[in-house]
Length: 195
Image (tube, rainbow, N blue to C red; front, side, top):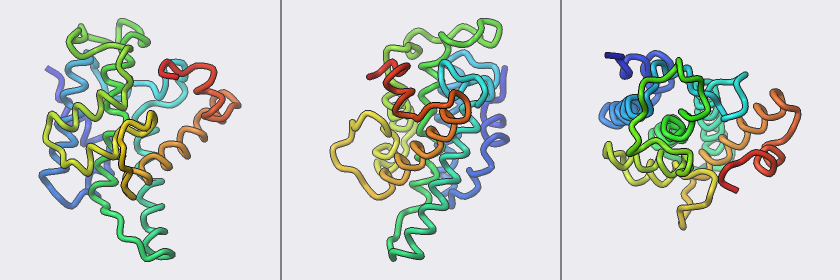
């Protein structure tokens, strides 16, 4: 059996930025559940997007997390804000965990075990299934609320949620520009399955 928890800890050194040990373990647990149910053999096999193979989901998630950590530091230094770093890091690390469920149909069969049909479907956007995974493992509400990053599903946005959303957009724009020569908005208009 694949040791998904070790994989998650190995690919996301940013986990160590989460001071609350319980929260850190819940992030690992959410990823392990998603990977197992999605039929993945290796966390690094999940692409950033169904049609962009040049960048892995791990690379994107790490980039989003690092951008958000830097942004939070700037908000503290320049604006006197006090964003909760544990919430930000946990939500960034989980913001695309739902791709474990959404992307198996787009990856070569030899990379997958049999995905669990109760969870895996390209019909459910990854921000929604990521929120569900965070809820299932008992992440705090503040983390859960910061995960739906794209569709505007959460009625009241927090500072932490806005940081996750803006860091995701910054990383995604860089990826779509470097991989395809287009902006994120152009990619969404042309290729998104949820618009």
